[in-house]
Image 1 (cartoon, one colour):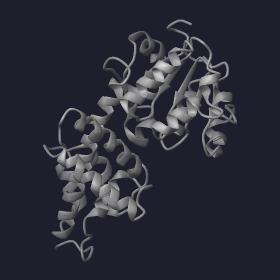
Image 2: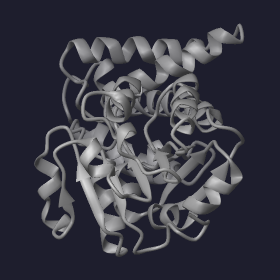
Image 3: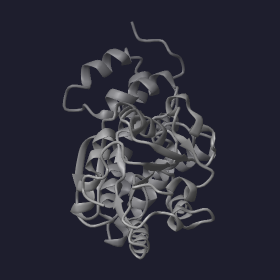
Image 4: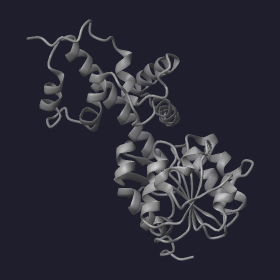
Length: 303
């Protein structure tokens, strides 16, 4: 198989149709890729926007005769199960095929997956994404890649359907290291927006006007632009699931500990997330961090 074999209509397997994976698969389907699909709940395999794609009973069935398998699952255990568990794709992936893993996992897990697949002459690209559900729907995600340059070039036509920015950082595992940094930045920026919103509400300021005034200045951020509204409404649709960000912060903090570094802001946000998860907010968007701070006594805006 050559570097051009992943242009449409190359046959693909896609496993993991969650908040990010489903719109990613829909975009590939619309781009003309024949898809064999599997997801744990099975329901999303029959989404109307995937009509004509083939639902499969297992990752192994999905991977049969594919040129690439795209993974977008929740954690390390899910990646290992998809590849090597009962009905895992590792047993049916054709020699010469490519696994493009868009999950967020530990760098050493990515390296272990790559090594085990290489024994079957299957290549692996470490390719976590960022950009939220908005980016997944729009095909404007950013992908952070680790792996061989040749594997990235082979995957590029497929990734260009999903992403507006493709960055390569080195060997397998490097993409996951950069994703950990991304999640540290997400932690700090979302927590800062939550605190700013809480302060403004308690001061009874017209917060929609305040956000509009500040988002293009030095305090502007993706979180302020895209998530302040959810915090003001006290309504937190996905986005990106708080429980998954909590898992990702654990990966980042483990990496920091490995080099003797403390990340006190990330540690504090992780504790805030743990408390919110205990209160039932784990399935909400990360912007539910606003719920860690008191609500104003009333919703009146100062005249």
